[in-house]
Image (cartoon, helix red, strand yellow):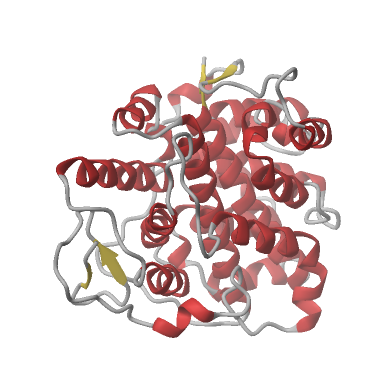
Length: 384
């Protein structure tokens, strides 16, 4: 895989075809591969802000290590190599444009040997890259055909579930880092040509009923291992994971830290109306109809369900009378649509409207987590 730096852009883009050239391309920031904290990527943060977040930061760090170990063994059922994992991570990081994230995954990917330069390998890598970009930037376009195209290039169900977890995780990591950088007042770097994610179409959200069915086989109880059964028992009671757990439990080492993040104290100090508002808003933007309808049935009465279904204009009209909700909506909209543009200009109003810096960080991290769950729901099944 060649890496190249485009004029006017400060991060690495990689080709979707293998290269037979002997010269090895070096990452833009090679030291980015050797950070101590591989989730926050060695951001220097005030202890009083980061300490209350350890309940969800620690499992996020654990999940990073499990998704991107130093070596990966492949088999007939699990063909996703270390190169595939980091190539996918870099693709998603590029979609979100957070420079620190791009530097890190480019630096980790650079020394790895790529796939051979055969037509089949190039087609496989191109299909993986296309899918990763689509699920990251326009999740609502992922459908049964997109999954079939992955299977056609030799990916197994285990590969696809792993890739979906990687894509969701990188989106969460990008938004957490963007939120912390905004807290620190660091300037954002706008990259030429980077598009903002568009909101999903409103028409599907006119329906208040939906049914989600998995597109992958669930863990069979009579064949499940003890750790799989334990993961099922522990995480399926969580509303956010109720229908996803039987599929995700195949890879219980990845499910467990995700469950710990969801079950953490991330939202404990936040008003329930804001928690529900953020979850519904991200589902609406990302096009996860079943996430939206499931949340709408249990949301507190203060949440404007009808306005959220209608779209941004109706939501803006509703929020005119509630400055705090308006600040939250504007921050979450930008963080969800374009993490690379999120800055102190969106973070500061949250604090001015009564949230502590810790609460603001937790609320923004919650929006990133909701985006992760939206993508898993879209990628792993179909909504009818």
